[in-house]
Length: 435
Image 1 (tube, rainbow, N blue to C red):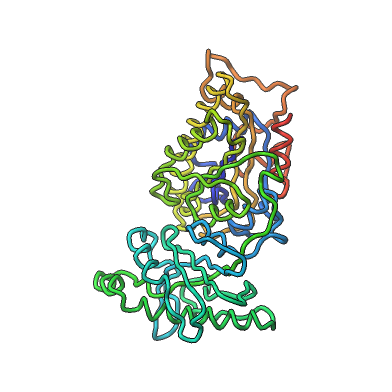
Image 2 (cartoon, rainbow, N blue to C red):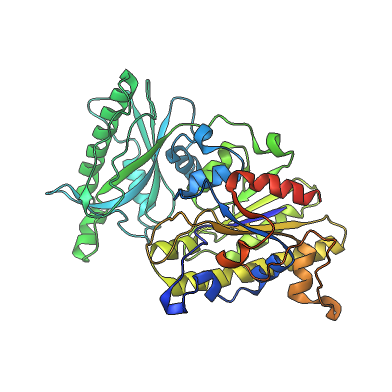
């Protein structure tokens, strides 16, 4: 089973494309072939009307109710970045950002998306930073991707029952962490986090990297926004739930950390960066290498693509279309190779395609619109894409196929699956595989 998750895939109608979405405007023959040869629907990642984050969406889609298992995205981000989490630790999903130190206003929540050369240096510099009022607490900082990093705090009596310091929008004041209840641990933790925020600002303000950036007219990375305070997830493993051994290709730390939390193996793909520079071919090659290895170690491969979401956040419709088309070519390669493997008796393969939420370019943020969903037999899609031996694929009434012919937000909702919540995805996958 191959599950391809395109982060932020959904969109809304755009006037410049005659009221079509970016997905409708893109040239995606492989996605259309998958929809034509399979079953389709419109999926609300968590629930209708809810603009979810990637973390809660992935939990829901993988069958873990976020109302039960979500304990803040900070632990996912930090684990994915390489910080081990043990019970009692807290961690934050964090951004290097730009602060006006005179006014306390966060001018830019993302100091620079192209931060992969400087981010690790600043993270190493901040690791082990001292908290004068709380000497018994250890701070570790690990670079993730772009402007992101994971921050872990280790020490006694910590809790995730606090708010963060991130105002969530540009040009708003830096926040103070606050306890979410009146217990001693929450009050203590909020004080520790506020001192940490202050000490990080002091450390970064005149760091040589920021001195040089100011000389160049660039935004200083002089604050770290701390949000999504989280602790370890206590949940059944993916294999326990579904009787399938799984691996995940997820260069974004938050998704990798989520996978690690439910004991999905994280596999690195060379050149897979989780941004606009990612190597989709390397992701496809790594997926096939692991799924087709002779030991049959894995029955489920999960491949995550982030760049489409970034284009939505950047309100860049042409770039979103460009990456949708790149994903389509990657899918064609995967389907062709898996179909060839199936003809060589290396297994029977199913492929699923969807997104974790919509990120419309008009708003540049996650929205509540459902996302298109399709699942098909690899051989069906391959016949449509490659038309081997000049065959023409004909929909057989006895096959589990609906009447959808294209993959889009508009078309897929007319499929046999209708509109459904993300919590049903894994049940749909398991039933389809056994059909």
